[in-house]
Length: 117
Image 1 (cartoon, rainbow, N blue to C red):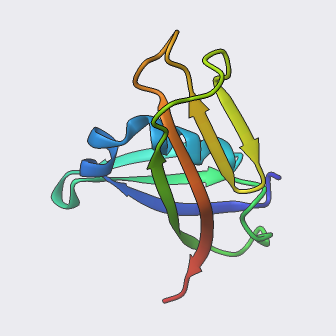
Image 2 (cartoon, rainbow, N blue to C red):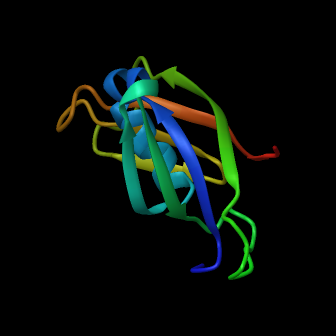
Image 3 (cartoon, rainbow, N blue to C red):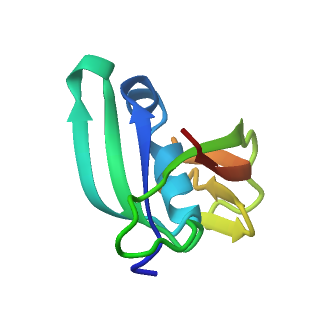
């Protein structure tokens, strides 16, 4: 995985309002951030990370930039309050009224696309 390096940005608004969902997306992508820089003028954090979902990068190449898209839906009434996360392919369902009442959402249809210049 060490040669699957990529870069991407997350806006400050998204980080402030959807922190748990972003953490779920990071988990789905098997992301291991190695650098995070807050870009004040654009109000975003620029990440450099390893992921098994990123393409292979040769040592002399610049790491590609990626964009993500997904659907996040609220889970109204979780069936099993003991389940914290159920991961299937590129979706994750996070529910726990008992331990973390705010963790009740599902991330579906996560797509990862390389951004070409």
